[in-house]
Image (tube, rainbow, N blue to C red; front, side, top):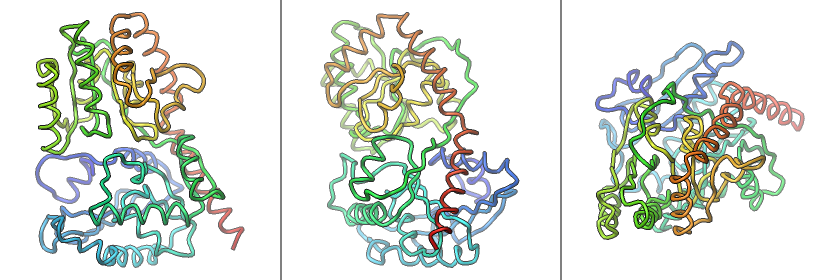
Length: 391
């Protein structure tokens, strides 16, 4: 979901952008003359299936959810789970047969609703691009039927497919625990870049921008702020993002109990990328104590904006420091160490400048969107060639 899709589908209300790395990749492919890209995606906001084209990009938007409405099925009525997403997968098979593509690229094995479709597609080379793993989600309760189905489908995909697009060492290691013979293709997803100037006046000490959840470290960050407050009384944290109402209420109560409610500004969801980046640029330090991630867009975008980053040493994040320190790493769950690093960096302006300059230079080279898409297209060609040679 993005502004263009929102307008093409004639939807109402605010645009809540989803999976911007997909939209950015599509925009890069749209500039090329050697590729026809067909995008198949489920939408519950539309009343019926629709199809439209934008140059060499062709969209198939499949209606899902309650018929003749813009709503999903109620959570207690797990129709899609019971049917193994039969009707969506049936439509995907028909569209794929009609297109007869050179290659199928599934983006994300973790969303069973659409990822399950590849389990029914045969005789095509298929590249699974990893966005994350539902099986590593610390918040998953494994009780809801949809959660169980997501775990089941993700495991089937990791076990039964051969070609995977990845961007982190930890992702490769995890896939190989299920599939030792899998073949990896390395490239980054495109990242959101902004023309926000570097001379934006600082208004916050810290910024957090991500889904506000336990898994993203929201609680740990609030605890760390309460520790730092003993030394830096006026410390300020800006939290940007959405979360479940019950969880937001919980962490706001946590902030009150820890006596840091007045130190935290909850900005909520900022729909405009430029406005969101402007708020991030107003902070001295970006914090993301996430427990489960590959290489989060939050960290890369902060580096590109010239905002130094402190984060947990998890997932693919350590890859950013392979050559030299570009982000400050803290062991997962160590809120005391997280607080110490925040305090030290806030009190060391020279270190802030040194770290932000190095990180910005590194990220500008490493996460070049044109190069990322070129690597992805080369992976497509390699997968097609290898698949055809094996036939």
